[in-house]
Image 1 (cartoon, rainbow, N blue to C red):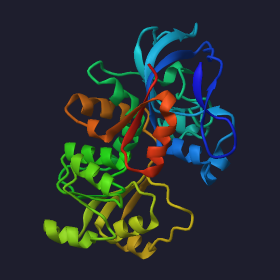
Image 2 (cartoon, rainbow, N blue to C red; image 1 turned 135 degrees about the horizontal axis):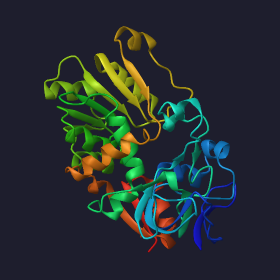
Image 3 (cartoon, rainbow, N blue to C red; image 1 turned 120 degrees about the horizontal axis):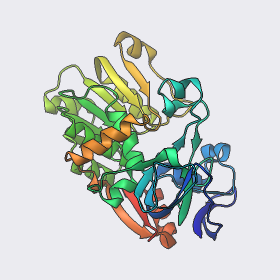
Length: 342
């Protein structure tokens, strides 16, 4: 079969012929129809410091995808050939303390599909049947293909009560920030202010429902608050940028007792004004993946109830044009980029 493989420990991804995986007794073999390029895939493509420390080559990448089940192992009884499915990308051990108390998303021994083992940028993928998810037929294939990052956005946005609250989203124009914007609007937030440096992505955040979106190099968060008539600060912060400057701007503009979801990966050199955190009584929550499997239920029900994230999909390419997909991802003038495998 054809697959996009991180073959060498250097910049790039290579389209190669590899063997079709053989499902084990508890696995399902899925024929991929659509996949989506993630920021993690771009890190692997660029072979940055994180990738060098994490990835063992060669490995087929990709962890956002959907397809049709074509074969199941002899022990599988809840997944059937012909079903349209997507997959939870974190394989939990099922036996550690976190797994056994319902926190599989922070399992002690998590294996990431497309990172620690072969992923979904291929014509076929074999995955544990326990990770296979059946999604309502009313949800389109393209949306199914991006339910993994939608889950990150849902986990980020809904970690704290949002109804009637004022929300600040840093990195609001990135795909996850943009989807989190739509979720906040859908969930009844009052004002949603987003920040982003990209003109293209600022426009995307507006389309996804931001009350106001600003480039912080040209306008301050304080000015945006005055324009909206806000007093005191934001109740909820969603940090999706990974920028130390953006994070500290968020802390400075939180209302006393505010709550912050931290999705963006901040560099080790990030300095924090701990006095602000302590004396404002702020709550910080680290966000990793999706809460398995509550987040999947929440996002499916929101999509069926009218949540529209379709504007976040901005580009589509056949998998043989993968280089164009990675080029536009690296440039940044895009939302989610879909690869077609049919």
